[in-house]
Image 1: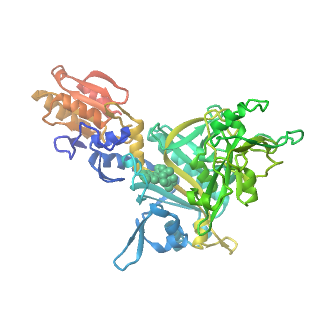
Image 2: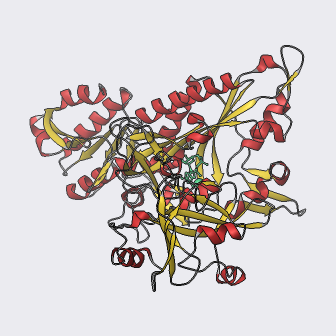
Image 3: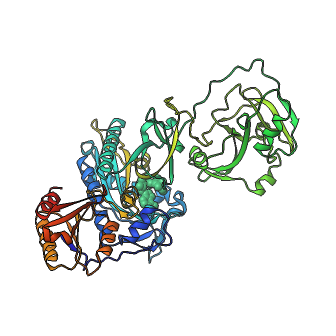
Length: 578
Ligand code: ATP
Ligand code: MG
């Protein structure tokens, strides 16, 4: 196929769009691949659509290769099924809800577990029909709180979502492994640098959920890894290595001391080191207590105290993940007013216990550890308050920040933090949805069996941005061959009639050999054409210009940044051999 730039529906921009922060967003807009319609809502112009289609092709090929079958469900869905699973409510403000002319409730699907479970229920009724995996490449809608970076986080976006149905856990594990492999091959072919991180704490069962994160400094997800052991996990999933419990014998008595103006950890540490405690105190010797309110769906608000070593901040995402599915909010002025035993800056375990507040502590707070913490009176702290002797927590919680240098949970060495963009997610869902819709089939022994599900997503439109994010330079995009909108970008440089005719012939010859060619036949200066060629990001730029009279063309490798002169005939061979 020859695409003539003189007639291509394309306008490149010299300046970055005002709302763009990350390179992929700037370049995809400047190169005329996408255009913004509303926050998180974008149009695909010809070149963007081509790259999107190439990404979809790779995704489909790898899904088909594991035996998944493609179907397509509507994005516009009636409320009923989502009511059954309570997601009509639980999904919160991210769900686009709308009404039809008869006042019936509808939604725009954010993900389709309900619909796939119902589809399988409608079609299959015997164990002989299993296992089965269905997928779609389809437009999803989520009213994201912060749509961001163009197509990276859209409110309308394209996802490949698949769902496996197996009769037992062993089958589910196999389907999960098949998806994991398919995703690895997919992202490999797309030329991405990525890591697989466990997305769920060990407590909930090892590999039941993993995320694929493309490495990127502009990513919204923080993950940690251990370079020695290869361990990698979402920060929410990191478990703290707890020290062993210590003996309570011979530990000094707890003492309440006057500590005026020590409502902050810094002030408290300064006081402690001036107070002749017989040891040097650091923030890690203090225990700070944070109060939150939690609510289970349909339940009452409950106060929860969270105790963590004073040298660490609370990581809100970890805190929320640890308390899921409960909703978590900080206390308001009126909550403090209603609970006068909460003395801000001086909250301690004793008042929490005395008032029946559930108290969860960092795993480092083990029996036998002594702490400096609030004494529940303004200007007073307690020193040597010993866990397991003077207070007994109701449990532990992973709410403290994870830091560079913390030990890896697998004991393999220190953790280092990095940032990434989620490109895929695989999840052993279990029977949540087949239970909700009583999806039962006839088992081999004549009894009913309930299939167990896996759910797996790939951010197809997001991938276009992620590839751009990893593959660009200061001059423009640099597509990997697998997804590039063309194979060769042929530039006619100059007005020489012979060179122009030569370029036309070369383009025709390449086309005849199945090479996809951009032919820049516009009436524009070579400088403008070169700049656009670099911006558009086709892997090879072939310049037909001054050298043509000697039978030479110039080949520029956009990926490697190299350039060389070759005879035209050789160029044809080189370019069609790729
Ligand atoms: P995120 O944490 O980035 O919001 P998610 O956990 O909501 O992602 P899933 O519900 O697992 O994502 O969706 C599957 C895949 O769809 C994700 O791995 C991601 O690549 C993609 N995706 C999710 N939300 C968006 C969005 N708003 N825009 C573009 N792609 C998205
Ligand atoms: Mg999300």
